[in-house]
Image 1 (cartoon, helix red, strand yellow):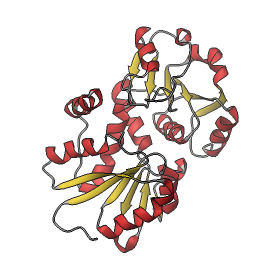
Image 2: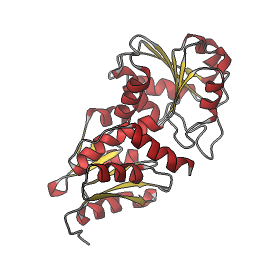
Image 3: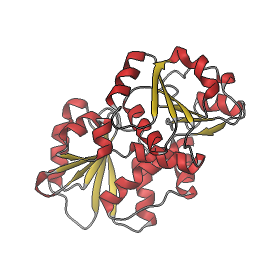
Length: 284
């Protein structure tokens, strides 16, 4: 079926998809900018991803945002990719062009970079502990490198994966990356200016990280890319110790802006009003 009418249609694809705030976020901007369009949530199992993407192209969609677990599959489907997607080995944005061509981008790094800029200011030369070595950690490494941090301690339950990720991005990331295990936390935490949780730990339905935050120095900050719940157990513990906390909602909003521009042809703004709109939905 081919979509008709003036409205611009895009989608967000994941499995499951009920957790996604993207439709709410994009509808806020569409209403604010008075654009006739919509972003449709699409729950797609792994085995159906390629078939659904082809169907959406034929139906006249502008493109799709891609969330778990399809980012690597989206990367593989794309005919061309931006530098961030190439470095991450994953795409969270597919743009459909004429002739069936698909462009893949990764805006996760942009989202985290801009969130940190907004909440932290400069990080040049600072020391960061990054927790996790999956796809989210790849994007986080690119974001931290763009902010010219001095050293990144990359800690993971499986230190081998941290080493593998370090080697994979060695030619792309200029910051000093030191891979290690979560057990290294006690020796490293006291030197960190910023902690970034790039794991799913603490997400709704997942066990929280077990970290001794008393080892962190005063003036340090903790960022959790998780946004549901908005205040994860990690952030709650950090706040109780008087540390600066940054939730994952800023990253979500900033990473969505390039997608909105690609789909709907206008540049949206990340504002306190948008944040309040999304917070209300999360609390509900």
